[in-house]
Length: 250
Image 1: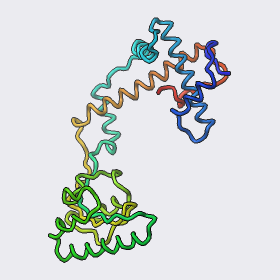
Image 2 (image 1 turned 180 degrees about the vertical axis):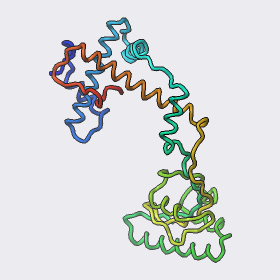
Image 3 (image 1 turned 60 degrees about the vertical axis):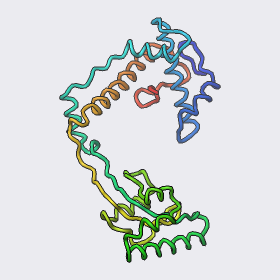
Image 4 (image 1 turned 45 degrees about the vertical axis):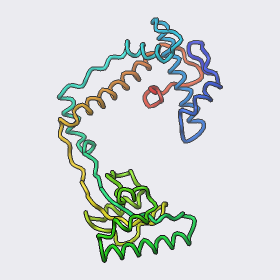
């Protein structure tokens, strides 16, 4: 039986809460859900004690946190230090612009895959002989991008399937991939149009983002510390509340 100052946290409530706490095991999910409900009860009880109670429990907790947790804004020197220590996280993304022709083929249909690969290889051979044929041949693509001449627009790392991204990385602007590119969608004829490597952003461009990150980190730490203070004052039975790494802030 889990209780917070005599208030029971029912097993049914913990079971319902588990859906919000995916974990590697049912026991881990149960622990995370139970701790979350214990934290919620601590906050609701303190909100009621301070006169923030009412039908809107979320509003009561927000009012309590707003009154009790103060987080100063990061000053210029702090932002500058964080900027200097985290330059790798503050780069513009690498982007490619490419066009393709998709010969669709279900991964489970071996005959269709073989036919699509052969057709893609034939298109590549035709484009090598006459690169200007791309706008005419793209009509055979199964991708909606055929309406844009096969142009996929700007592609950032992680936004397409790994095989397609690997093909882009192997090309220089203007080059046609020498072989059909296989993905779960079928076989692609791929031409890279443009490539822009990521580059370091100046401090002025990311100062507001850094300040927001630092404030969020400070806020979460302050809320966690405040919950620990409340937990230290309360009588919690049936569970040990995580001190630092548990689900104290949702």
